[in-house]
Image (cartoon, rainbow, N blue to C red; front, side):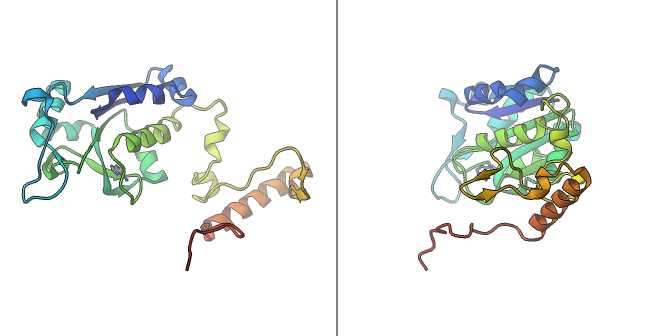
Length: 238
Ligand code: ADE
């Protein structure tokens, strides 16, 4: 998979590329390349944003700047680009990222991720250049870079060679093997700590009983998503 990330902070992505499962996939021929859209701005002094029409706080990324950058990279009108590859703009109000969308993106041979900053994108970028607008959650980050890293991490770990053991991906949370439910609980040594015992079934060596116990726990977790932990301070002062 070839991933291009349009960002004002290309140096941030060096860290991502050095993470083991990402590095594993890059070693198989996949790429993450960053494009600094300040580089191709047609405006003076590297300007990329402007004040919003109608007034209000913050700055908005300009449509002409993104167009120049996409054209310089791909040599086509960005309006046509999204017919050839997924062009994903990161914004808090977009389609929520979930396992289904991660699977869709992981099946693409090429992806373009657009990272906004400040107040976000001029709406015409989303309307005319993006094939998708994606959010990693209903909260506001200072820009799309962390969201782009989340997408890269989730997508690349689906590709062959990312994880040391391919079983890790087959039976993980939200997989088909677990009927889309969260993963079952895991335990390791010691079998007892402060009187907290590991469930006996996991020590039994009985593979069928273990598999069915795990399926049940996974279903339970899917049926009742977690609230605050019992005994934990929710921070709610009432
Ligand atoms: N940019 C700012 N906040 C974001 C979010 N929650 N998801 C994706 N992109 C964003």
